[in-house]
Image (cartoon, rainbow, N blue to C red; front, side, top):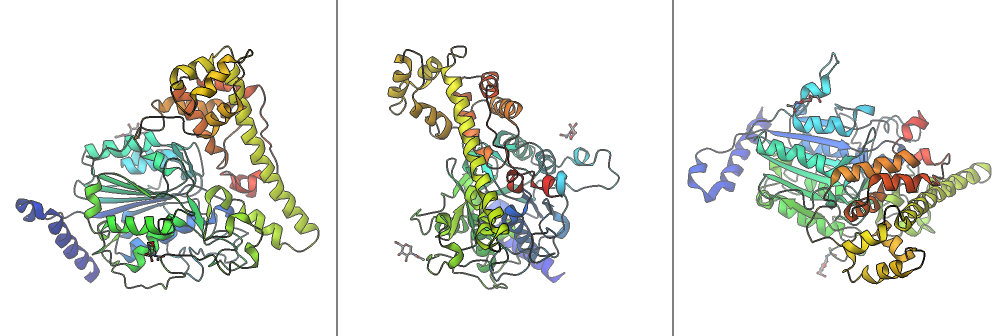
Amino acid sequence: MVAAARFLLLAAVAAACICCSSARELKQPVQGDLWAVLIAGSAGYGNYRHQADICHAYQILRHGGVKEDHIITMMYDDIADHPSNPHPGKLFNRPKGPDVYTGVKIDYSHEDVNAENFLAVLAGNASAVNAGRRSSRRVLETGPNDKVFVYYSDHGAPGIVGMPSGPFLYADQLHAVIATRARERAFGEMVVYIEACESGSMFEGLLEEDLRIYATTAANAHESSWGTYCPGMNPSPPPEFGTCLGDLYSVAWMENAEHADLTLETLKKQFQLVKQRVSQNFTYSQGSHVLRFGALPIGEEPAAEFMGYGNTGDGTVPLAQPLLGNDGEDAGAAGEGAPWVQLGAVAQREADLLPLWHAAQTAPEGAARAAAARELEAEVSRRTALDASVTAAVRRLLASPASGALPLLHFKYGGSAQLGPLLAAGLASPSGTPPEALVAAVVGQALPRPAGTALVDDWDCLRAMVGAWEGACGRLDQYGMRHTRAFANLCNTGLRPADLGAAAAEGCTTGSSGAAVLIGPDAHVAEA
Ligand SMILES: *[C@@H]1O[C@H](CO)[C@@H](O)[C@H](O)[C@H]1NC(C)=O
Ligand SMILES: *[C@@H]1O[C@H](CO)[C@@H](O)[C@H](O)[C@H]1NC(C)=O
């Protein structure tokens, strides 16, 4: 009761402060409630860190006084009792940190964690998630004064984020739901935090400034986000874990939320501190560019408005490391020889290799170690083969007279200083063979677009490109999803999904191997 009263009192005071520009509004302070949606987009022990992030966020919100029935949690929930978990029934989000799993109430688990349900939760569409069910599942039930905090942690790629079941979540789908709800005044304000590779592409060119939605992303539209507290780092998780415990942007905001007085610290201040930590004190020697989108004035509000007024910086949990800095010294024997873990963070796509790499280092000498090494090698080869398959398909597509791809590209990008000469060389070659540098650009780079525009103009095209690829070559996993970059380039050039499908069908080296199932989004299928 006391905590609740305090929450209301402080909420009223804070709301009054925010409105000081308008004397009339002072008389009617906002009396809304705080809601949250927390979602981890993967399964599998190699993805331990993402579900640990989500559990940690749950604890912070509860500590902040957010009501249990106002937090909707979506996580696959295969880690706590995973055979690889050295501490059954527990999850940790930092070395020497507390168990964050106990007490978390999970609303959607296993295959119910999917894009469709997530969107229905945000849309407040109870009938969509409860059709044909006896027990009812929760969705947002906000009113026009309520605030909503949404936090996603997992793997992303240009224009999408992953889900442990079903199709990817596309940026335009997320935007359509939250923008519609904002226009309907279904909530007062919404804050969205997204940890994922290329997460800036989820909002860039999409999220309006006048919708009372404020978002921050771990990375810009072109780069990886980073895992942290991985084997071999300083600080390192105890050796029995063999996996990363957290993600850099995620632990940066959450450790800030635990140690700062969020009734005084604004969202903008938190953003700046998170940005500083994730960029290694703005050096970008590793880490990513944390970005903000949407209604930036919301950033002037105390973070407690979205994380709970009980978070006053009482520091209930000691930090495992200073908020900034990770000097990389004393990385420990486990880190030696692993090029990607010499510093305090590791790019997401490499972080997935760590459990395999760790097993290959630490398994008992002999047959077990050899098997672990083979598994790691198989996964690395599988990735190489998949990348080569996409490159080969794009090469065939650009060379294909049917699609006339080179002239199309030339029409669209001929004036670009970067691509112009390559395109000219391709058109001049007798066989119409695209130069390899052009193929590489289409596969791996963001072809020039006006600043601030979304990844693609036609999101249905991107979905269809993914569908065409998957139809010919099999499902894209959390590594393969990175190739939405290539598919987006093809859409923006005016190429058709059917052309990609035909080029892909001419030969896929999917590189299928036993190891792949260990870390793909469908890891649970094989491990079950
Ligand atoms: C809720 O979801 C159902 C089933 O997907 C759909 O038919 C219905 O139109 C949705 N309702 C609203 C208000 O969007
Ligand atoms: C961050 O960089 C600034 C400017 O170079 C420096 O003054 C400051 O001490 C650094 N902070 C940390 C924590 O390393």
